[in-house]
Amino acid sequence: MLRLGLKTLPLFVALPAVAGPLDEPHLSIIPRTASEVERIARVTAPPQGFDAPQRFEALSAGAATVRVRKDADAFSEPSASMSFESELEFELGKAMFEKLWVSSPSSTKASDGLGPLYNARSCMRCHINDGRGHPPESHDDSAVSMFLRVAVPDEADPMVERIEGYHGTMPDPTYGGQLQDFALAGYPAEYRLQIDYQEMSIPLAGGDKASLRKPTYKAADLAYGPLHPDATLSPRIAPQMIGLGLLEAIPAADILAKADPEDTDGDGISGKPNIVWSERYQMPMLGRFGLKAGRPTVEEQSAAAFFRDIGISNPLFPDAWGDCSLNQSDCRSAPHGDKDVRGTELDETGLDLVTFYSRHLGVPARRDVEDKAVLRGKKLFHEVGCASCHTPSYVTHRLKEEPELGFQLIWPYTDLLLHDMGEGLADGQPEARANGQEWRTPPLWGIGLTEQVSGHRFFLHDGRARSHLEAVLWHGGEAEPQRDAVIAMQPDDRAALISFLESL
Image (tube, rainbow, N blue to C red; front, side, top):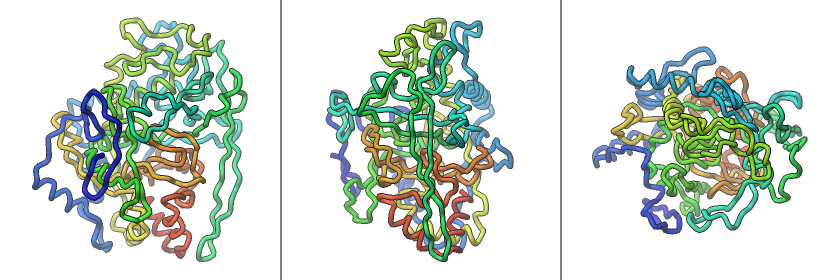
């Protein structure tokens, strides 16, 4: 057990190596001084008034904040604090992020290895303009930026013994850990994603109404036989990419200090950390990335996406056939792009470049921070209790390497913890210590620019919400009191709350 302040957190069964979620081997940390700790406590304290913006509030990412562009590339700017020398590395990483991979064998050796089964040919195909993906808008529409994660319960999962509270799972024995809806010529795609919606009317105070659409997901046209009878399907859309390096640089201790898995303070909020196994460091670490915080670092999130989404092997996931299962023998025996000068289809250099790019995508500045409606909405956001999970601000670690990410006051509006969001949003699929009703609190910075960047207004983990209000109204579980408070608001107050969210 680890005690942080007044909160007691369960960790994991001891391993031969001394390691824990407070360990951050991916960062070159300069410890804080006592005076810095005091300064940070003051600057990140809750606001005392709402008549004016807080100091530095408009700078969402501190010195790394970028100007607000008016076009679809608002999420594609390099961090404003990046050195001129680093811009070349950023641009090379961007090229890797946008690269269209091709099948093997190919004369373009640096780009072959696609699939044979895959969800997209490039990272950018899912993360549209470095923003959010979207669900298909009809049965005939492509699901290129959305997929179904697959898992089967597995009590023999070794992580159950290594990490306390871990939910053992394994991939589906036929389809692997993710369903792929594209395939190279000569190989059948695994399935077709089918979504059907049922509209539900929600009465709101003041005579207003809202309509929510409840999705039903089906893995149609399964090409390799039935799924395991105990398989669970979790719909996921690609999240936005901005500010990932800053989220990675938030001290683990600051995140863990906000956890209260037993709700010992009685406020109804019982966030807990996801503790996951690191492929790079071979140890348990704090999960930060992915919709259930299933990956500890930007590098591991990137490597897993190359492997599962595109079928590209890399130093952390070296199987050249990607997510193909043992039962998909044709896929495993197909020509692959590994074992040339690269070693894996994406080599260490390529993975480093994509990781650098992903860490350094700039966060746009806030808009309208002095607007009266925005300030009113901010007050309601705090009064209702939204900030209990969507923690407004942090100060990142001081860093010896990548100092442009270090010691920045940032405003991501997330605690990076897992919360029970109720049956309405449940996918029934565990991921590490997350159960089937728990999701990581998503960062809200940049959310008001979603339509400008990605061309749509679909929110939540599966894009079911068509507006910020719908997203709020889907909140349940720990957030049910906050949802009910929004329902009970008068129309002008609800509009002010939405204006605040649009300003982020």
